[in-house]
Image (cartoon, rainbow, N blue to C red; front, side, top):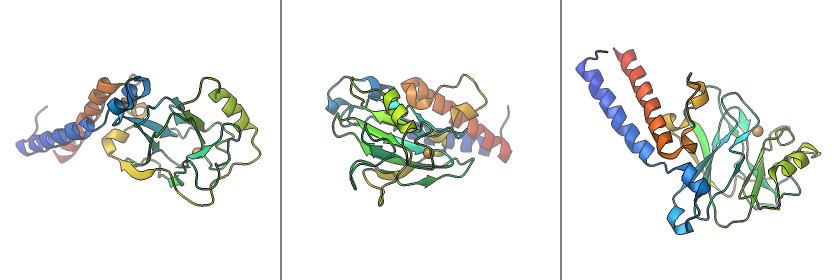
Length: 228
Ligand SMILES: [Cu+2]
């Protein structure tokens, strides 16, 4: 391919920016599997997708282990979802007023490239059972857990959610975390890229970051072609 000099300069600048952006994101794989002391993993971020490009009633991953001091970022896909913490025994119902986490509802337009996020820090090893309080999403299996204990299974929680008589949101909020948004390149959905073999960037560490770089390169090339 041949690009005019100005286009190549733009491309170069975009790639420089993408390197900086991806370098700031620690490996989710490391945070999910590490047994190192909390101080060694305090900066790790695990991304949990809230739904996906297909609009599935899922959290992905729905189950994860997050060390004390690490962070979990919920990333909201279309259309309109929430994350609410419940007890193991009472899915689809919030904890006592103001306890735990409630992200509020995030209404996200189809086809967006700017994803709302909600980030919490893991302060202890207690399990965080959570669900989406939109419509009947909780009953539909849109539930998950962080740091599940050995004697309690997500499948049990899913079954209890399916039988819940109501799906409730906290009366006030949000609380328990920090709102933000993800950049375009980091939010790119691998399943929508047209490549069936694309890996999820948040789950593959260094390889994932390389994958993100490849997407940014593809995006930058797209911009360059448009400008030509
Ligand atoms: Cu939902």
